[in-house]
Length: 238
Image (tube, rainbow, N blue to C red):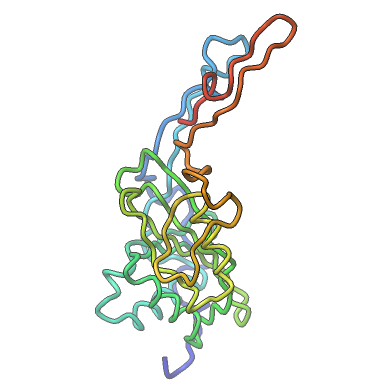
């Protein structure tokens, strides 16, 4: 943008919409019990925990969030609707859900524009939601603006059958190792990475061990005449 904008005065008063201002629209799963236990005397097997994600927020977002989104939409132009899937403001934090095809362009704008100036990407984390059909794998990028002392989060969701996300090492070179780690543990393929290889597990390792459906493995253990089955036979991730 040619003229610097004051992002702090746009939108609602400080605080913006609260958690109760919208419905939680994405139910990922419902967990029952704990550690897969059934019939124990602790009562843990009676626990029922819904796994929910906050839904898209409505404007005004509050604080500086409206101004930042407005600037990004202006920079993207006619591609804004396709690039920004939806915006979430939850617990005072701003998350932009971005289509993977537009990730690199969005990162370039976030870094370069004088009103945004998110000079640092603090890495990328993988998340696996097996029950979130078509969006099982999420890549999450925390961004830091040193100039404006602000933070936001970029999130990209992909199908585990097509786990490809563009590498942003051309924009944030420090993400090199972080993308390797996320590939290693979650199997998200960062297209365009200069050397996408495992960083923790051996090169010939099969699978990605932080996925929820990865087998726990283990061996049975005998203890005072009783045999404790291996974790893959007594516990499961749900």
